[in-house]
Every structure is written in structure tokens, then in C-alpha cells.
Image (tube, rainbow over all chains, first blue to last red):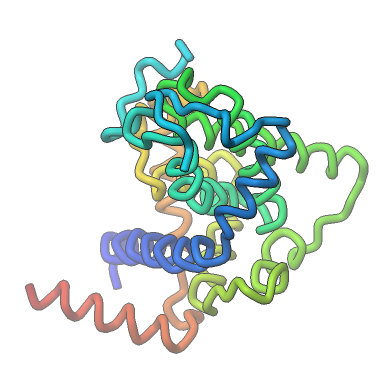
Length: 58
Length: 193
């Protein structure tokens, strides 16, 4: 395999790894729980927090 | 955030996300992985990503490019913490620097192939890893230059060296069996086009 082909393999491997890892990480995150902890840490009441566009956080 | 005004990364503005919750759900895993790709363990990356999310929650609606900003904060947090460990003489074993990915949580199952690629990436110097991580994340050289404060030419040089180094260190015979077969299929498909 020549250098150009190996570079293409490297790019493909990186993209493949990213897709695989993101799937695992996304499945691992409990959004509601982590958001609740985050709001608690910074002392923000999510029910009263208003998004920049004026929408209430869900 | 005047220092990010020149960043034009797709449609990446806070308007796109609507709410911080949407932003958090989409970007939290991505920021975590970018920090992992730049050399952090999963635990380090999650701490860094959470610090970034905290700061952005407090500034939500006032940041023009929150995803780029999150990566900057998270990477700086990781480097700061890693430098602190080094200063304190904490020994980071090879396993500690990367190999605890699957062990950090039983709910995260990175396959053997991903482990191999991350270890390969971890063999690069920090600057090259960072540029590679942000490139895989979808940022171009101009955006990475803005984010890291480096000249664009330096970013391009680091990226070029990173790809060459990875290609040089890639030994197809050392790839896990499953990955080797995938690479063979992929190269065969490409050559037959």
C-alpha cells in the first residue's frame, strides 16, 4: 500500500472511530440527569431560565 | 465573543440550537470525544466537557459560536489539569493516558478497533493531536487557527505532519482482525470505482 493510500486509510479510520465512539458516548449520557446536576451546580433554576431566543427550556 | 467573530463553521451559531438543552444533548458527547482525541482519558474529557457546559449555560445566548467555544474551554481545562498532574509529579502510565477508556465505565464499550486508532493518535505530539481532533470534528484550518490562537500556516503544518505520522505508524498487520478485514474491503471498493 503506497503512502497516499495509507493517508486515505488513516482518514477513514479516524472517521470510523469518531462515529463509533460518539454513538457510545451519546448512549451513555442521561441528558435530564446531567442537566439537572449542572443547573444545580451553577445555581440556575431551569424552570426560570430563558433561552436566548425567548423559549423556555423544555 | 469578539475573538470568534471570524469563525464560520457551517451553521454553527447559538440560533441553530434554540435552547441550551438542545445544545447540551448534541454537543456534550462531541466535546467529550474531541478532548479524548486530543489525548485525555474519558474521565478527564468528561470533566473538561462538563466545565465547558457550565460556562456556556451561564453565558447562553451571549456566545456567537457556542460549539467552538465549548471545545476551547474544554481543551484548555484538560491541558490545565494535565499540566497540574505533571507538575505534581503524578505518573501517567500508558494505560492511564488512554487504556482506561472502556474500564472507566461499564456502560461505555469502545471496540478494539477504536482503541487501536486512539492509541495511534495518542502517539502524536500534543499540537498535532489537537489539530487532528478538531479536524475530525469538522473544523477547517482557519477555524482551528482562531480557536487555538495559532497562525493558520502552523495549523496546516501540524495537520500535514499529523496525517503523515499516523500513516507512517499505521501497520496494517497490527490492526485488529476485524478492522484489517474492513480496511481490505474498503480499499477494494475504492480501487474498483
